[in-house]
Image 1 (cartoon, rainbow, N blue to C red):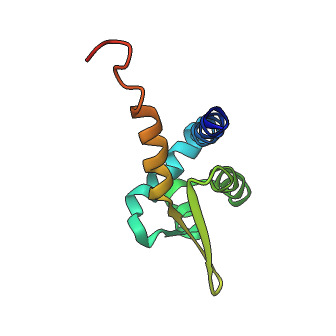
Image 2 (image 1 turned 60 degrees about the horizontal axis):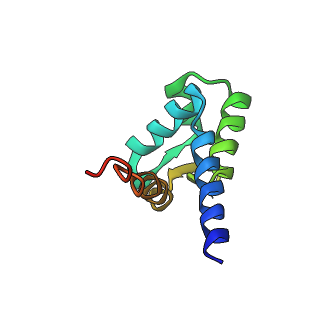
Length: 104
């Protein structure tokens, strides 16, 4: 059972990292990280990053599907927020292997 859990973690980590594998998505994600827990309105993201609405929607969908951001409708606004719990998980996954082969 341990191997299955590890494989699932690897798949999740790979999905999260792949979602950030585009320069546009990385810029978008960094903007949401800077916004903090308050998040950002999609219209503000579009204006600040200069991304067409359809392109922005595609990239936000990719990042949300990977579990790295949450989206919440507040009236007519769509607020996107970085999921810091998920960021910590993928960071811990990567750091768990730090120096294991180098005898640090």
